[in-house]
Length: 90
Image (spheres, rainbow, N blue to C red):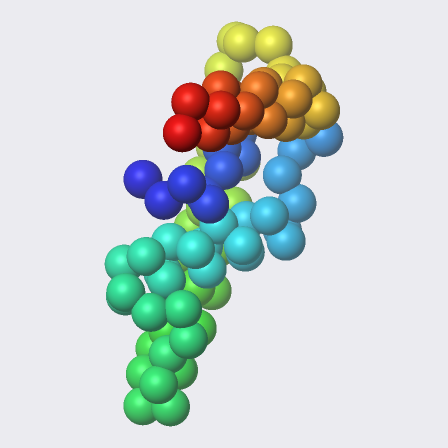
């Protein structure tokens, strides 16, 4: 999985449309193998981003969980700690 795509489900406050759009863009970049499409592929590239963002928002709206909502600051702190451990040994 692309490391730049973050978990968006079960957060308080819920994921914003900007976060969903960013995840969709990262996904399309990964799948297409390019960060900036050529002029010939630009329309298809950005159409795919829009469609994936739309479907992702529907998915997030439909998911149900009994788990408590996660806190963004706590999750960010955990990620920083994991990164420190990973890069400290290098």
